[in-house]
Image 1 (spheres, rainbow, N blue to C red):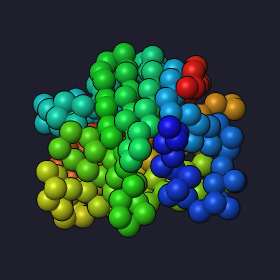
Image 2 (image 1 turned 180 degrees about the vertical axis):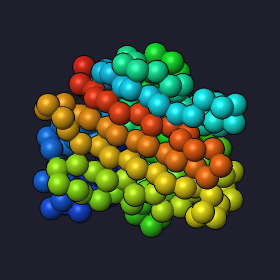
Image 3 (image 1 turned 60 degrees about the horizontal axis):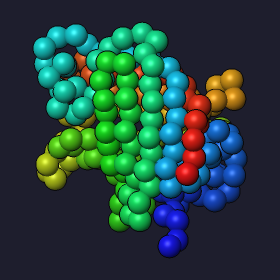
Image 4 (image 1 turned 90 degrees about the vertical axis):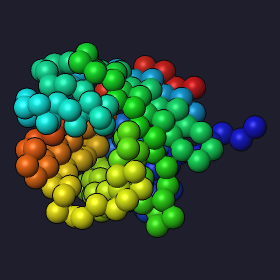
Length: 182
């Protein structure tokens, strides 16, 4: 049986892919199952609306220096990412959209990203958001910063989501080291 193809190399120009840091290439392309662990600082507004939105989207609660583990399971047409933080579990399904964008489903929300190389890192540029399949106006999804790169030779991530009226829904930054590739 053929090994499922990783999404990210198909969504980033081949010349740009070769210029990414090796830790980024490994995390986004090796094996059918990857297990990794590390640390993350998680921030976010503490009011009830932000806490409710994080629960709906299965996002972790704020806390410094949280242990984090990640399992990526690659299937024929999608990848399932399960992140276990000390203060919550976040699961999303990633697949390729018809427009060569990365689609990430978190609960009832689907995020449409363009993946661009920025130096030796990936800049995830949010283009569209759908809630239960219905497109949302651009003004509703605020500012989303998402980057995967490397720090001290390890895979590093930096995500910050600011929403109108809610403020900082979630921001998490940290690193992962691959423990096992299958």
